[in-house]
Structures are given as C-alpha cells and as structure tokens.
Image (tube, rainbow, N blue to C red; front, side, top):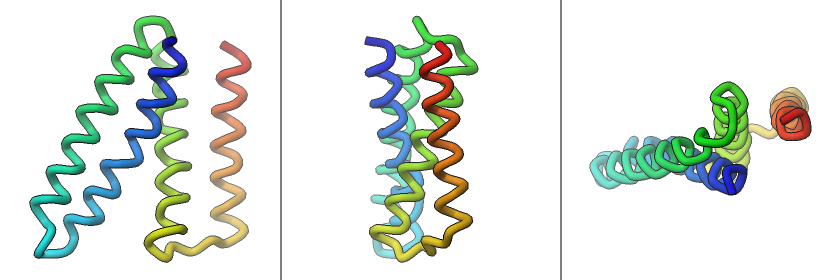
Length: 105
C-alpha cells in the first residue's frame, strides 16, 4: 500500500507547478496559487503516508522523480515546452533511476 501512496503522491506533485503556471496570468493568479497549495498539501500528505513503510531517501527520490517527469510531460503536451533529444534523455534517466530504486527496495 505504501508504494501506491507514493505513486499517488508523485502524481499529485505534478499539480503544484501547474498551479504556479496558472498563477502567472493576472486574472487567474489566486486560483493558480490555491491550486498549487492544495496539491502541495495533498502530495505531502501522501508522501507522509508512504514514508511509514518506505525509507525516506527512496520515497523522496521516487516522489520527486515522478513529479519531475510528469511535470515535464505536462509542459510539453499543454504548454509548448521544447521536446529536444537532450531533455527527453534526461527525463528517461530520471525514470530509470526511479525504477532502479523500486527494484532495489
């Protein structure tokens, strides 16, 4: 169950950078900030649950890895971020590290 909490925490981690992006527009500033804070709280709570059974270093690395890779993908799909070879290779290295941590646990 802890790994499910951790995966959910990582997916929720994607929400707060998106909220901050939304807040860059003056007409949606407070909505974006509220979205970011809500996702931070929810993600942090799920990480807290996961850390009851998963070592702190492993859980934190997986949490940030899922969040980073997911935010990267959202940026490409919805915000026009560049999808260069180097950026994609970097994210694949992050994902490989997360998989290695899971296998090694």
